Amino acid sequence: MRCLSSLLLAGLWAGLCLATAGCGDEDSQTPVERKRLKSKSADTRAEAARRLAQSGQMNEDTTRDLADVARTDQDRKVRIQAVVALGEAARRYQHAREALISTLDDSDAMVRNRARQAIAKLGPEAKAALPKLVDGLAAEDADGQWWTLTALGGLGAESAQAVPDLYRLLGSTDPRVRSRAAWALGKIGPPAKFAIARLTTALEDGDGAVRAEAAAALGHMGPLAAGSVAALRKLLNNDPIPSIRLEAEAALKQIQKTP
Image (cartoon, rainbow, N blue to C red; front, top):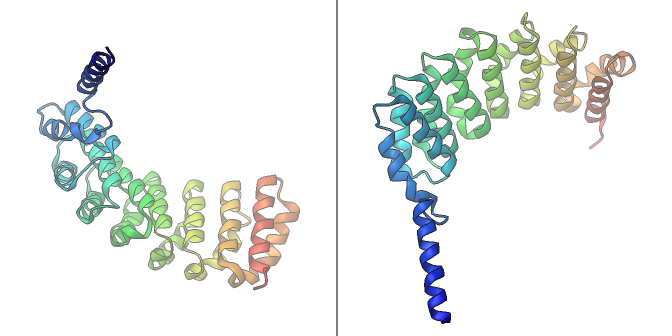
């Protein structure tokens, strides 16, 4: 009787596995989704790329298929999903990183911005993207610049050569761009010391987010920003926004800390 029960349970479990395309074996769906990447339906191709990204089970052949889709598919929503999937695989496969970087030249702004978002998550591993990112700062609108700055900040000190461009964007007419430029300079840290004077001026910006990010960036410069102490104390004592005063206080501690 016990054996019969075990067999019945095993049969039920096997049926459940078949119904859900594998018990914990997410990779069992990969061949199906790879085939769907070649569907005539753009919606089907996009959904296949999305599922592959979520599966976490992309092998080398799958990522090469996704790279081809990201570069050549005629439908932007398909290319967007392929870029997202490549971002999930880019830490493991160099060719996925290379394909991701190549999509920074895509004709569609949304595709380019998704690529920048993925590159930001990769950090210094995506340093090969730096030339294209720097080029994008001059070519893009405010949204594109924001995402480009996010990617540059994600690269950290590897983005040091972009400091002059970030310095320039501290003077953007768009406060989102100014604040993100200050944030990116802070992520670069001491190699961005060239921008300390401009960040100090930004402590008086009319936009609160810019003031906050400028203060935080100066803190990341450490003792190199000693010349900004007076301006930070003024911000600490006079800014009407509590969170900005906290940023000024934290920056002062970072700048004045003793080894």
